[in-house]
Amino acid sequence: MVGDTIAAVATAIGEGGIGIVRVSGPDAKEVIQKVFLPRYGSSVDSWTSHTLHLGHVVHPDDGHVIDEVLCAWMAGPHSFTTEDVVEFHCHGGSVPVRETLNAVLRAGVRLAEPGEFARRAFLGGRLDLAQAEAIIGIIRSKTRDGLGAAVSQLEGQLSRRISKVRNEILAVLAHLEALIDFPEEDLPDITPERLSKDVQAIFMEIQRLLNRSQTGRVLQEGWRTVIAGRPNVGKSSLLNALLDEQRAIVTDIPGTTRDAIEEFIEIGGIPLRLVDTAGIRETEDLVEKIGVEKTREYMEKADLVLYVLDGSDELSNDDEELLRSLQERPSVVLVNKSDLAIRRLDEQQLRAVIGDKLIIYMSAKEGWGLEELAVQIRRLVYKDEAGNSLSIMDPTESRLDLITQARHREALERAQSHIRSVQSGLEMALSPDFLTIDLKAAWEALGEIIGETVGEDILDKIFSSFCIGK
Ligand code: GDP
Image (tube, rainbow, N blue to C red; front, top):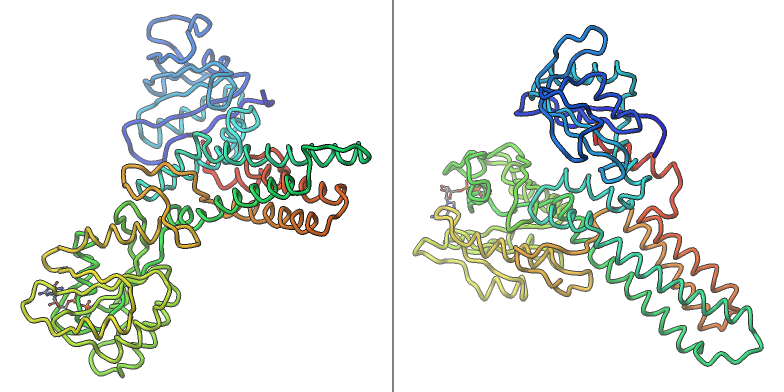
């Protein structure tokens, strides 16, 4: 239990089916007694935990009825915060919700800070820090896969992995300390070879987690994607086909889609933040070169490039130049207008420029080729940094211990660099005392991820990014 009792509106403000006022802390029961009149008369003392009760919220000063509500009672420690929690499920309008909150505050509790409920869940030991952060990941997830990654983090998948590595570090520490304590003794289990093998295993485990951080970041934040290509090849049509609604104006005149449209779409479970480069092209007779340079600039800033060609037209010099600049970056070459009988695009010439990059034949007009594009984008995302595919390509299987947060990645990198120091220390046969310093530092860095070794300042920073009521 952490001090006082707090309250806040837990649902989004505005009109909805219901709006919830949430209360947590030692006085939660007292709040019910002061502001809730149950329809069927029973007192809160006789309520079983985790039950719902119909009744009215009334103002504690004069008893006037504010709203008819359902009151949910969840006794600690088996509640979200581990404290006594009550929720008033009001009618979902800003006034009933606001007036209910006012009544609750009037009953003597304090307005919660942003993220304070989740913080109490963390302090109460109900969630570790990575799990608490997963709540925000769930709320802000943009696609099915992003949600899957956040939910598995909430379930503790990542935390278990981190704890496992920390335990392995502790085991090595114990061995080193045995060497320090009994320097004269021959400890057959603790050879330098064995130690380096264990340390190498720890290093690799951290590396495996880091390898997945790119994928995690994409699922969380979306991939900044540029649809590039010469005017009139069908970029806007592709965008529209992807958006499935007409957001860009498609015309027969080259370069008439003017505005750079940034849209957010989901394709194959992957969130893409689309920038339509059709929009950066000026109309008619502006020098072609400006367009090419601008396009390249955009392409360089993007995480993913979808380069569109018109299959009924030849490859131009601009195309060659832009395609060459794609090199190793994640990109897909799309040959559009493949529904047309005329095929002027020379595939051999294209191959010579793009090497073994995948080509997808498609028709934005008729809407085919998009599924293959989705599969290919998933392939590009579900890859570790060495380019190996991660196991889950199946869209229904998105539960992965991915690193979705920059904070976690940074802590892993720090832990790994300490482990690297331990490795070089072992090679130089440094005294065990030196090695333990770095091992402990690595153990602590990993502890920051799950919140075992973090200061108040970091907690403040994390929980203040939550919304009020969470
Ligand atoms: P952008 O300038 O690259 O954005 O090209 P648009 O999307 O505006 O398309 C230019 C023209 O090509 C329009 O008349 C489209 O209807 C046509 N178009 C786009 N995609 C296809 C396709 O897959 N097949 C055919 N036959 N026409 C297409």
